[in-house]
Length: 249
Image (cartoon, rainbow, N blue to C red):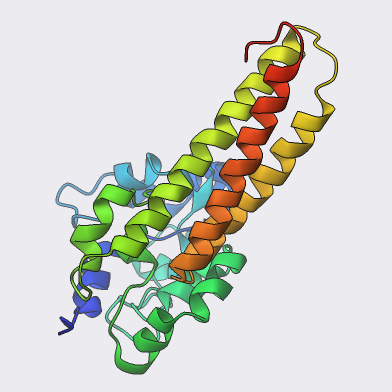
């Protein structure tokens, strides 16, 4: 039996600060940062430090593109014009709107999610995951295989298929990274004949990235197939390097 997730509560808890493309220099000078970094009693997810230390903060991504308002204005009332609370269905950070808001930058992931049964349930009944469920309000977290059970079992039985697929993605990432490092070492040594393995690396990296995007569709069989294909290509590239005379990548 499914357990209903109150995503409105989740959104209110996690979605106090979102972000989209911008400049850290502009963000640092904006009234958003000027005020919120000095707030003493911050809502759990509404922390300036959380944003500053997040992947989005480090990538120079600001706040107002998702929340609205005008950070160029110094006064609180003026800067907050157009802002709506996350409990307002018209807000871009309302729980059913979060995927579209994130998708304004993460288009491929949004399209994969939009076609999923989870997205359809979220829009139809207000139940099911959105981006925050797996990534957190600062989008600074990628859920590991070991973390799936605690989240997925809120609605599902033990997620054995999802676990296998997520583990395969992690293994693919490790294999692709290993091949990349081996190629870099040999290039530094001036080793010739690396082209076949370099080609394998490009193919493996491309398919690994496809598996990351496909994950957002929740079609775990497709994710598993892509991740395993990426691992095979990376392993093939490493084998080609090892076959070169005197090579020990």
